[in-house]
Length: 217
Length: 263
Image (tube, rainbow over all chains, first blue to last red; front, side, top):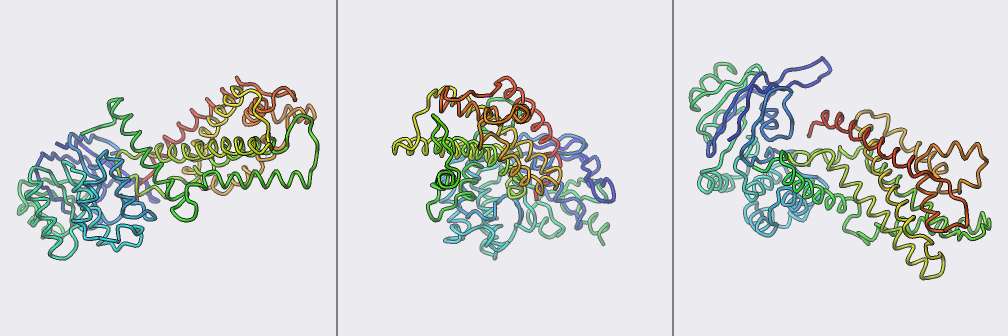
């Protein structure tokens, strides 16, 4: 599981210290699909980065007892001047997994074909998202951190993602951040809302949704 | 979940990460086109040969017992080692920001990958060029290989610690990016690459004695040429300098790493 205990994150800005998250608590158990709602700038990305361990909290504890993915978002995770294959190899080395099966899976799943031999900086954001998503599936994490924007592609690709996450990886956890309550409703079984630096946890998506519409409406 | 908390798995992860970063640096540094990885030693080889030719044409100073090609080779190889190590660490974080998205990739790993590549490149070029030049009779065989290796090892340590220090400073202040080139150019003639300490007047000898790389270069040359000249080096001073610089570099890198926000 993953445990956030009284996690606070402050950033130094030009106008002094800014508290983005204030004493946030959250438990994520194996297999749970959790949504985190928040308006733009509420601290959703910060939340994902703290969960992944890319950034350290200013205060509080992040306990990670699962193998957590890197934040799957448009940017980050890939080096732009390297090709898709190079980035794939890099990620295989960093996470200690064999290359061949990953290559096979990513080629079949991502639909990127010969683009895999092109520098990632030439990719569209949709192509990047497909690569990130396919790679994270191949590395076999216990918990996926997904930025809403990653849920891209046409209906067919979305359907494939759905099968991978909800059928083949029923036992794996997923945390998805979004400002779009519909996406959360589609993918998650419970949700939390970030508002004013605090995280409000709800037992199901509907309660989270009605609170969210109240504060953002 | 594999964490970095326990030592052995942590070392394994760090080894994997540094290996992956080194491969990534090789691709962007040497590319896939042209002669690719051969640039690793062709670049310094061309430079050393150029210096040798220029020296033979323009300076033409005869030094008893010392081959000018070997003098240029040892001098320039030494400069390459510390210059490339420090140069490659300036602003090393920025191009790797997106890779820091992977939890186990840390700022120190980015620096170590680049430093390993630079030390390997400079060592490889020095080795290959010594062998090739020796084969063609341009340079003699080293007189004392052990001294040469100790000198090279200490210079590599110095170069690595200098790289970490300069890299950390460049992450803390933009000033370093602007002035490090100038400092490098100023250090080049002072570093011991272009002279032997015994050629200098006593006052100047005392002054350059403060520069750790002078001690290493003298030791490397003493190992190469043997007792045809009187070397000026103090291994204790060199080791203490490396140690102090390493600690300072790692300390400052710790501060710099906390401020890094992966994009």
